Image (cartoon, rainbow, N blue to C red; front, side):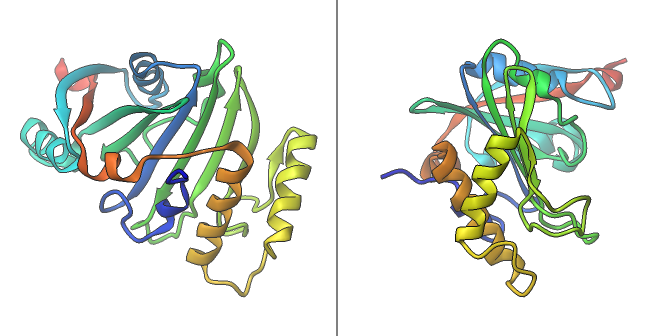
Length: 218
């Protein structure tokens, strides 16, 4: 029995603002952190280790370093079974490209993001990159509120995920977004074997890094 990922649909499941989670198979923590930093789209960022911290500890570190946690970006990193994971803190929203290059070299990388406090509203999103290619992606509300609400990617995988969603009665415009969100995460965890250790993420000290903006250091 594992924690799966459906718990991410709970309100403020990891921190205020939403969640930014990367799950990887075939990459170590240092490589994953470096690849996330390399996907920054507005500035060059470097990885600066700051020891082992809880989520609250990393937010305090961001506050101390930048004056406001929202002005910096940090990651907490860990390994659980076959998965390496990275959880984002601070002002990570919209700062990184959805870049399939993060999975180059035969890795499987899953990106899960939700800007929970964004009033536009932006739905939670899922992207699966494999060996430098995007093979499956969709918004987890399965609606057209932010781009196309349909599953996209490799046809065989799209058909399989669409079939699993249909078995759960989705899409369904009458169902509450949070229920749809939780159900779609459940489909993904079963299809791809995704899991994120809840107690470890919420309570345990984990290796933490700042993704320092080099333009601010000039």
